[in-house]
Image (cartoon, rainbow, N blue to C red; front, side):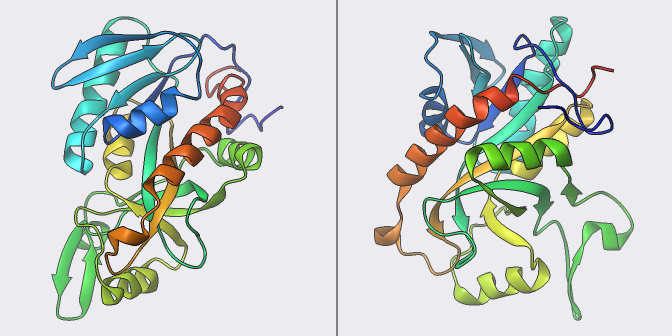
Length: 249
């Protein structure tokens, strides 16, 4: 696998990768894809799980703010140790926009967008960029997204980051209207991407769909199936992660 020189290159498996999930159940689902022994080390407000032969895993917390803070702490600690990360992956389960992202499917973001970072006006929602500052979208390396999606059979499109989970059909329709490429919504990806961008580290977001975006119906959620899909996806993703480097000339 050779990637275009402007988007990524081959690396050895020694490159460090950080996977940030929201909660321990998601972290453990990723860990099951890697057979190595897990060792735990402390970070401010979180614990880093190091998997022999696999990535470092961080249950960063729920929501974009805590996810950003925890991810930044891990990135800073690695940089100070002289062993910075080459890639950060925001991972976990998510709501999928039906019918494009059905239950159990994997979604790999080609855009990580903060859906509700901005202002409500009489004319409608204005993203923070429309107010003249900030950013609302991070774009993972396009070549890596293509190769990874092909390897794991993932859908590619926009993954939205929200601070309030969608619970009505009206809100789901509003998000579809504003973000026609959206496949899924979750609560951490943009925060993780902000931390990665501050450190100059590329980012991916991989989500397994556990429920449809819209009216909340817990009885219809398939969290176990989504966690299993996440494990399977990372098992297939591992060879891709071991062969990519944004720095090699």
